[in-house]
Image (cartoon, rainbow, N blue to C red):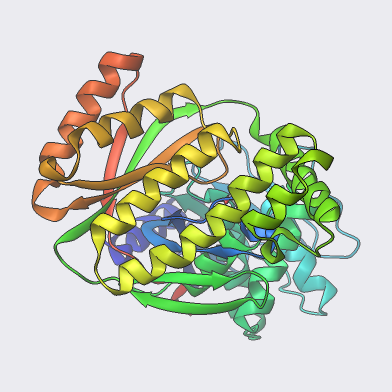
Length: 391
Ligand code: GLA
């Protein structure tokens, strides 16, 4: 389904629920990160692309007299209502409405009040699959509020507002990658983002002979919530012992020289981050040169580092990567790794376009044999960031 078809579908659903057509329609994409995992909150580099999976919101002013914002999601039975007045209180922990609420709070804090509206939210980004369904939701809401208030934010400010919503309302101390790519994605480009300077650099990726494959393991181990902040703290501890502001400023040699002063686990966490930042920069060079075997090797190395040093993989994702590696370049796979926060979710593979169908079949069959689970596999070209479909 194209984005316009998807938007038409959501508009028709809005009409069914609210008995009138929507006045506004916006969309924001999910993302897949090619390489550069857990580097964003260490001031390092990431290399994500937006995917052709979107959160779409159709909205309009209420027909009836009400002071509230009413949000409905096609995944939920009950609507939620929000009073657009400060201070806006978070919903209970784990409630999906915290993402929109946090974004609305960010607009209110800037004196931008959207007033009351009705909205229907629909997403084709798999929820909780490590493809940034939450950032897509935040950025879609922010895009809607820009249209309603008539104030377009600077893209960096918009991404940071959404990140703050996730910190303060959803309670997840995420980095800046997901919101940046959902705002700034460009068709046929990866985004090499320097998370220290926040300078985005577009890296063209339009070679039709390679395809990005997303393999959803369809498992989610409930560790993400507690493990993510722990990893962040371990990185800060390592940076402190190294005497640098962040691990971006450290080298493998410097780390080795303080090894004795460091807990063994903290040492391995820092090993991952320092080596991953370097791999990400090299991978961007590889993409620019269309050197796919080199990019693929960096992806495998990244996976090993996440599995052994950062310890954020799981046996199901390891199985996917092993299967991909066994297919290898002769079978059309250049590289594969886990993508996103960890403990399940998706793997990303770089493959020869003409072998994608055979590769997908083989991965699905072998994964089922090894784990008993059905994987969901899809391909995506690098997509554009958030867009207004109807203003
Ligand atoms: C999650 C966070 C990002 C980033 C990744 C790991 O997706 O939201 O900020 O830290 O994990 O690379």
